[in-house]
Length: 99
Image (cartoon, rainbow, N blue to C red; front, side, top):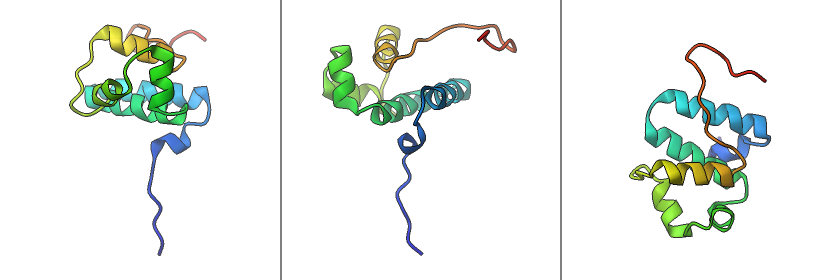
């Protein structure tokens, strides 16, 4: 049997796929899960280098920021989300966001 490496970014084809993926990562409650999800989304949308160009952040610092050891500030996460074409928002618990 042949195995193929698994990469979440291979399955993030549409903005809706990405939105659901990031929402699930946020619901997990572990910041490391969110950072990994953001890194996977960056990969799916052209890579960390492209995200660095879009955000103006240093490529090496993005790799560190989006690692398990990353501890970014809110401003950095907001800038990364914007660079990926998304934004953070708040909604009441148990109330789905209006479409």
